[in-house]
Length: 248
Ligand SMILES: NC(=O)c1ccc[n+]([C@@H]2O[C@H](COP(=O)([O-])OP(=O)(O)OC[C@H]3O[C@@H](n4cnc5c(N)ncnc54)[C@H](O)[C@@H]3O)[C@@H](O)[C@H]2O)c1
Image 1 (cartoon, rainbow, N blue to C red):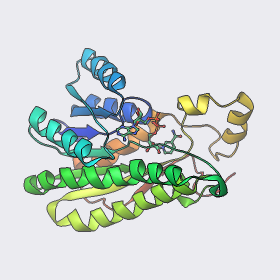
Image 2: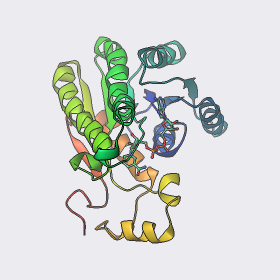
Image 3: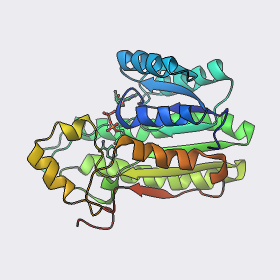
């Protein structure tokens, strides 16, 4: 992989998809900053990856707040001296029918899923512009196409697509690319907490007939993060077994 010796920051990498992304980049020889809002997750993932011989460093902070986002980028610079790859992965869902959605449900999801990407990118981009190199990978969702019961989540992920396309234009001349990965159903703890019947029903809507794991999302992120992906920018890659085309 063309990420040898690069420095990567992965937000929300204390579990789930972010953890897989961090491990995948570390396997490819990048030095990786682990971030989460949950301090126990930061230390357990840093210990776990460190014990496998990977060069990682943990930073606990809320990337939806300016101090947390700036603190994360400052930490990466202090620890590793530069920042080459930024993966904006932290995200939450607060699904409800619009008619029952509170203002807090709306604000929290937009703040964590979308504003965080603005804040971390703004903090990191200055350094990427100075070095004339950068790979920004934003985690969106297939749900940006629309999802009943997910007005706040779908809108936040639609914002991720627009943000990504705009970053691609603004930063292209600095050799910084910006792309988005849009996962569909992913076999995480959340999916496994559903009843076997619901899991089965949902799986049947995936054209390819099975649900991907966090590793499939990490694979797409690693592709965009690669040195060789310099001519690919402003793109959205669906990783959803064909579900973006339509339910099967
Ligand atoms: N799991 C899926 O099926 C799925 C599908 C499509 C898109 N996604 C997207 O993938 C990303 C990761 O999802 P996941 O399923 O791994 O979620 P997850 O809940 O398992 O992990 C997310 C991590 O982010 C951390 N986090 C939350 N808010 C934070 C903040 N403000 N600052 C720092 N860390 C924060 C959490 O503590 C958690 O450890 C999200 O952006 C999500 O919207 C997930």
